[in-house]
Image 1 (cartoon, rainbow, N blue to C red):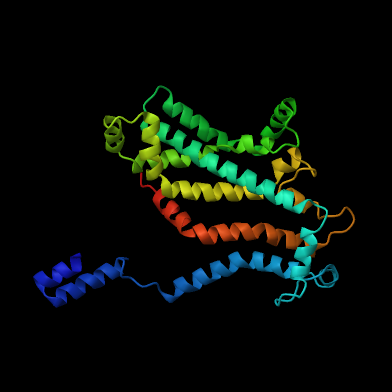
Image 2: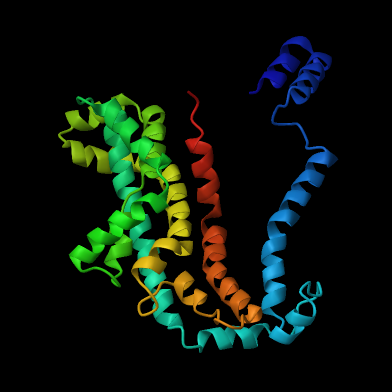
Length: 302
């Protein structure tokens, strides 16, 4: 029984109505959004969708039409599937590039979730010397621009003989500092010590305690971390372009090869962009609810 119903029984219907009205005015669960809220949300959605729709319009045109009119008609043209077929059957190694992107994004995402949760569990719930200092060091690495580490990383990969190999992209992306920080902050508040102590009393080792207690407790934020890591790995262009080259590319690197030195067919380029975005949209549609729940569970009060 909620508070308004209890007040109705104790003090009568009028008191119950007053309580419900005050609760609504205070922003309770019964409050209905106003028209301005819907207007703002609609504008935000339209602004978010417009770049993707503009890309689709260019992908459904042809090079001559785009040259004559860079701002296309709001009605899609008839050449979309023809352009998609041209991209797929071009000489950019399309399908090998797709397979490479799937391998890199999947392996990096799964690995980041596992190792970041393991490190977050250790920083949040284990007591060892230098714990805070190590966590601060991990967080501090987020302030270092990626470009500063490219030269030494390339030298290391060349000495290992991994230039042009997917290992050079996968190994540096097996875990991220943001993932460690995210999971440690969540597990610090969301995982009670009593559960860990109960698992230890039942005979679990610390690693089994992590698998059977820590991982289930971090399911929501782990799903969010998986999605964000997958998207970041899928669209990553800078490092794969440097280390892989055109012979063994990921999808963003392969799509860059659609640009000629003297002429750029934006209809083909934008068709490639649409192809690369479709898997991400499918993932967000399928796993969107896990993303929302992960963000809400990760919003831990200090």
